Figure 1 (cartoon, helix red, strand yellow):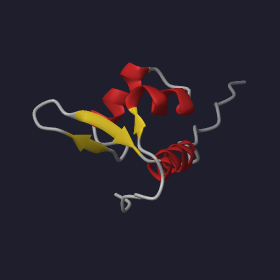
Figure 2 (cartoon, rainbow, N blue to C red):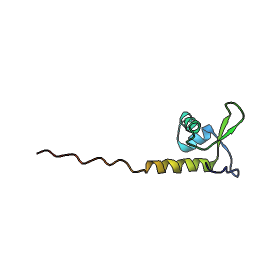
Figure 3 (spheres, one colour):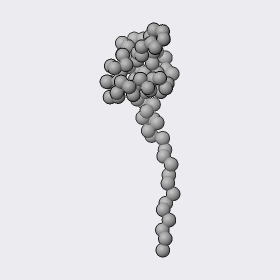
Figure 4 (cartoon, helix red, strand yellow):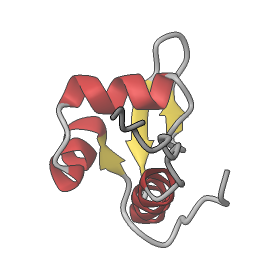
Length: 80
């Protein structure tokens, strides 16, 4: 996880989802599964808060994940 950037405003789950063009539910699940760094405010269920740096890190990690080399399929055999 990256360090917390306290210089910028904290975004709510809905605001962050809108910036990332994700649904509220998808971003919440990403946070619960630990795929995006976030801050929890309060006890119990708590409220999710995100910094702009955390959103940028998430986007960069998704771009890197999409660029991983794929499995090369063997050439099809030609039958004569």
